Image (cartoon, rainbow, N blue to C red):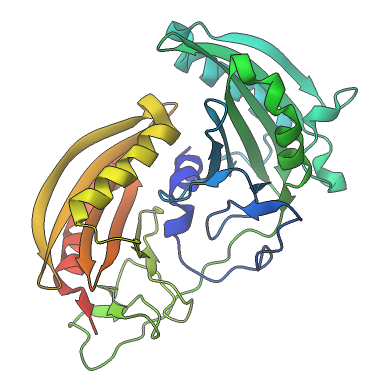
Length: 344
């Protein structure tokens, strides 16, 4: 369960070398909506908007109504768990989660005689399962379609959420997304202990040398790869820290950026998003704001602290994510990372 929820939200925040799924390689008329480190590729039509800001492989289409797609994987605690057993578990979880919202199962079929339940073009993903159900949220009926396959011991889930009244009208897009879905090898994490003369004692560099800043993380307890081209680190429990940047077309403050980002979170996660609070601080001798929020999936809650600052017109986010039960265990380390973060 922990691996599943972390995979949903924190794929972008995990570092390390991985094989497969390299490069863009999007089919004609489509684009990549996959966060880094995932064992699959999610491609969506060019008319869709990609949304990976929180580490979720997802996209949405706003021209017709509410339409979104996301993909994730789950590594079961029991490696012998069958696909049918997992699908039954998912149905029960969904029914419990949406019991007060009029959950109604439309279909839960296998691939035999049901073309829409295969996933991608690979032969070993044709034996998939499909769950289609409806629920009413804030007086709006939604249809949820989940296609689930087992790949190299993991369960891969492709999930669509669509306003019921437009479900049929976007069926062609859904089929394109399903047909072009690709699985690949799971990330294999490596680490290093790179330092330089400016590295604080007991810490190491977790950012690429060609970046304009330095992310330092504790030497012990965090894995990173300073040659990955990114700035990321993760702990043994999959808690993660990442640095991302955004270059706005017009001048933007940290709070203005957050207003935009939070709007995307609400649009993507709906009532699964929960704002917790914010605090002002200094990072790299600049004004910054740390925003804390929670995103829920089933019975699991991921807690995120996103620290936002502006430097030379570019907005930087230093984002710490953890399963809520593990969040406090790493806050001292994360605060130290923020204290020693510098621009070069």
